[in-house]
Amino acid sequence: MSGTTTRRPGVVLAVILVTQLMVILDATVVNIAMPKIQHALDFSPSSLSWVQNAYALAFGGLLLLGARAGDLLGRRRVFIAGVSIFTLASLLGGLAPSAELLLTARVLQGVGGAIAAPAALTLMMLTYREGPERMKALGYYSLVSSGGGSVGLVLGGMLTDWASWRWGLFINVPIGIGLIIAARQVLTETERETGRFDIAGAITSTLGISSLVYGFIRVADIGWTAPEAIAAFTAGVVLLVAFVLIERRVSHPIVPLRLFRFASRSASYLTMLLVVGTMFGMFFFLTQFLQGVLELSPLAAGLAFLPMTGLLFAASRVVPRVLNRIDGTRLMLLGSLLITTGTLWLTQLDASSTYLANVVGPMVVFGLGAGMLFIPLVGRAIANVAPEDSGAASGLLNVVQQVGGALGLGILVTVFGTASRGSAGTTPRAVLTDGVHAAFIGAAVYAVLSLSMIVISVKPWTWLRRSQGPAEGDPLAVDNEAKALVETEGTSGVVGIHS
Image (tube, rainbow, N blue to C red; front, top):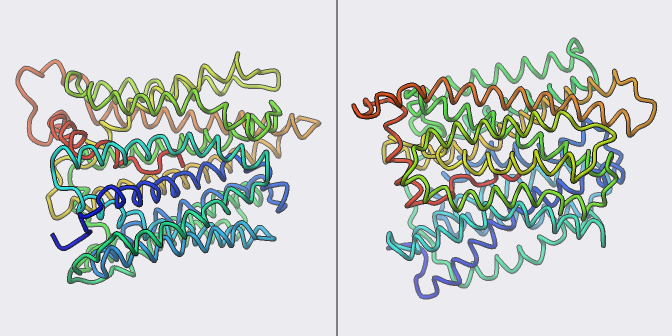
């Protein structure tokens, strides 16, 4: 193996896990501090979502290009470069005196994460050969990926309450410096592959999605007919059409279009887009409700999310074992139904609601459903993928999660802004309650659409023909491959779902 050194595999694993934790933590640490950031840097309610979306779009849009950079330039070099960019961007964000500089720092953080994360996972796979040791390492990686969001919410609340929201960014600086020093000591450079960068594909896809998200967010303030909004939507559509045309012609596409040939796989990507959009919206607006309406402190708000994230984490550990005995499509249906139920339940929140009586219940239902849904959905998304496309398929799944979250949040911000402007409330608290209520209704529509996609694509009535065996191309045929995925990769494909 010409890759990472195996003399100190434990230290290599520690470097990878801390990197993954830093990337996951950063999203939720900032999320819980949103109300403080809004007040400190004078964000409008709609533009505040860019603190989340700037990171998600940069990370998701450049993730595949980052993975390709590791192949062509060497993964150790790319890993150190990505962590360095992330660390410097965190320092810039913590010092940011204005909203514009904070958003710039968030974009740079996303760029650094997109460069470092794919290289980190590949370095870990090279360090541990197939077998019990790799399984154990992937188990730790999955633990950090699924549990890091919960830690970030609590840590973000602590730092915001006891020091400042800026420390949610500053904390990355010493961690990043330590990672760079350790990486130089314990990682060995990998061999470079031959090929080309699909720069045009990366630029058109990232700018196209960003234009659409920008349009939805600006609509909340300026309306649908404003020239700025029309220009943003037009540019988004043109750029995405150009992206598809580019991917059809280049020799090394960043997204091989053949991945969408199977209807079940395309449906899985679309379902993931909708589900993560629901989750991003729920996290963002429930944070506003807990602090703005229920008047919880940032720390209390972070702790308030633990019933949901704890159940999500627990379910993600149990589901791989259950998949050996239960049809994965049934888990997907039940999980999506629970997510829909939890989101619809949240639409009942109002100014008289209390945490224990009205928030804990939907959180528990939502968290349990998400934990049941994600692993079998990941399995369906990358089942039957050709070996040469496996990296692109896994990377695309992460891209869908980040873009789905950003696009979903952008649409829900529009709903929130429209409802807030039309609110009959006479106090900021009442206006916020009306806006959050409308946003939860929008999130419920997302959840219903994702449930409908699953029902249509898995065709539950085909279970009646189970004894005849699934036909090739039938979604039921992926169950064994989904189980194999879980056995070999755990939940590592669900990176960033807590963002």
